[in-house]
Image (cartoon, rainbow, N blue to C red; front, side, top):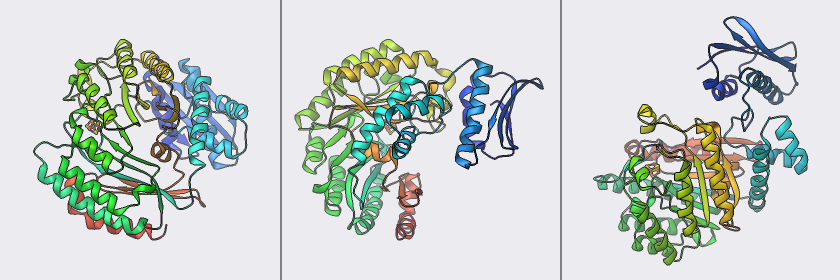
Length: 468
Ligand code: SF4
């Protein structure tokens, strides 16, 4: 990565992230970010020669000061590279939080847009997207009750590990004893949470992973019975189960999910191209996706999400057009579009040289194809987030038909209420609204460790939750 130095401040994280956006456009330069004598300044050197500098008066507020340091650096980088970024100097993963803050300051839509474009240098189409999503989110967030929380339960097993996956997930084959031990430990955590949550209102419950439907019928029923016995499931506004891999879906499991009050599922093709499915390590075909989808409709699911990923190895815009035309025939209720992110913990990151990844112009075209397809299915964007190391530094967007927006997805993005998370790798987030503070309580990721140390996980939760 391009070398840099900070003078007069320690804002390493943000400065490094902005430089990382430009890394591939920079060659042999050295950057200094300076806060001195009430001035924010960025200097870019080539062979010890100062080639560009930008400086502006520093605000007194430390938060605004940080933003000013980022902004002068961004302007200097644009001048050197002649390259503007769609998201300006924004590197955070929850861009819509800014819009919510500006809405709380009572700015109108035009003023918010101006601020996004003129202050953060966000491109107009992205600013419009942010505002549209934030308005939709607000409709849902405004209904949050005081004693409300969301609940997450993780099942870290899948039929096989996808090429790009960095989640806590174990191939389930030949691990039946481990699954049983995991469910024993998880039950302990559920029983602890039952006590803590008895006076709370759970609005949304999400079972994710992994692929929860990798569990066999008995295991799945065992989990659903425990959940239905422990929490007031009838009062939920939303109960989602990830059924991501069609090779884990059977008619019996779908009926079981329905019987135990699950009202939203996610069937995630990622692509409808059979060759790509093989390449990314999925052990199912496009035809199985279609079959699983119709089976779910027959079982009575009227809220089905589908996920796709843009920029999968070997895919071009024509593959995305094809996937979208196939998905359109199914007409799911929501669609989540991810731009591929190269995660350090994935197999893809270890074998990158074997794959050629597409450039940002192609990613942008793919985003447009999915946007057009979502609109033509009667959907609108309702949630949005960004990740590190995404191809082209774009975004992930959730689209949905009216009334089919996932409440849980919005809660996790906007962090307006606490989320109690159970299972290996699950991270509980406590939101302290009065002080605007968030405290995280992570469980260990490793399933063997989680099982061994379940009492410790529960004690840790208990000691922090008592102050909530
Ligand atoms: S289905 Fe999801 S959790 Fe499972 S291996 Fe693939 S990406 Fe990972």
